[in-house]
Image (cartoon, rainbow, N blue to C red; front, side, top):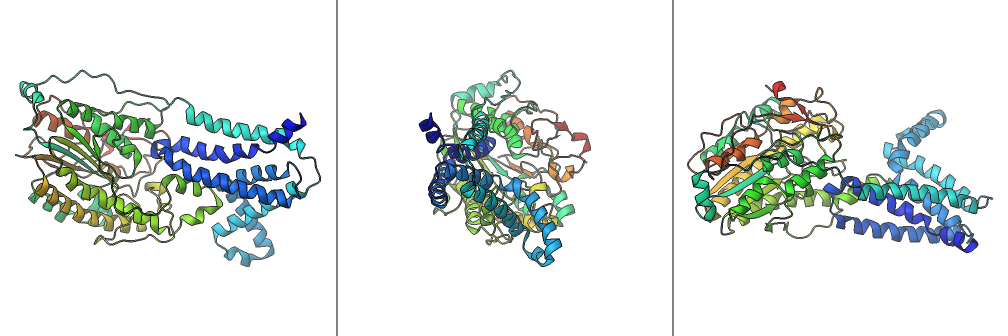
Length: 524
């Protein structure tokens, strides 16, 4: 029994090392690739080994004390984001009473000092206190196993799944039946999603930006600009899932919106239909995993020379720890994102050169934050900010001035790159092409993720749309929403039979993304 207790005393730190990594991955797995776990896992295990050796020496090789100190250290390290604010508040009160000059330290500095003082006191008691460490073995295992069990449950529990309502297969017109045999005469189809690209009237009203020159440049290239378009949803995964499935999303408040939406994107109706026509599926990803078509025939993912950078999972993990300061002024992260934006647009030309009928899906994470491009396309680095894809209420605590400046400049840079990409596409294409340029939603400077009442709905839902159809497309009306764009194109160009659905818009929170509130009547 003593040998078993001695054996068990060395392994409870594994619970505290593995649980936070697995739990964080489980919560965000729709947006994180599994291989991103490997490097943090190796670093945590290596760091734990070094700390164990240090604690073992400090405890004068007393059995049981080093593992206990390590488990406490790991728990405190990964719980820093929860522990630090109340500790900093207590420390601030002490500073006010003893020496107010200490308040000159930065907020982050005070958080780390408070955390270090508490952890040092606890570790000192553990390593040198006069008590029997065997008494702590059962409680620490109970806590550790509970911690790990919750993480494993989150990782392996079946996720709630919602299928689209069963719809009858569209009745094929005689033209469609003929063309199904050979679609060599049908044009290629491009769907290019410019994330958070707003409509002209809202850009003018909120940003003082007259985007007319860009819209006119598209019109001279044959595009029809839909000047009263509204998005159907204001979360990217939901908007893309609905657009590619040609249907409104079913409501399911208990399901994980991002994970469910990513599944709908992977198995979307538009791709399935075009495959039956012999179309190749080409995916040009943005680096945002939920919108990637992983089952595409070709994926154009090259971003040029590899850039050294933390993965999205590593950045998320670091933000919860005392090492969050490493995320500030993180130039490699901005360099990598900028390279991804440029690659996404340049790969449109590569896709155009691919022979045979094809559907090309391109997601460009701009003008959405982070803002990494100046108005002339030059590299910029936001100061004193962590790299993040967050916007709306997640952007700089509602810093509208920084959002307005960054968004305007990045949009102007993207405008030029989009025109260059459209010219290159037309020059290099091997077949006629239908091109849909769209914002998945509008800009979200004044969006509140918890409340439609505190959200500027007209800004959030007013999205950019421009469509190029050889021969023109008078059926694409100015007020068309994205869910109907491909329905009408499939009907009028490809001979399918998809009647236009009522144009509706739905708000949902980040916490309950599939709990929809229709706000169509609230949009001017």
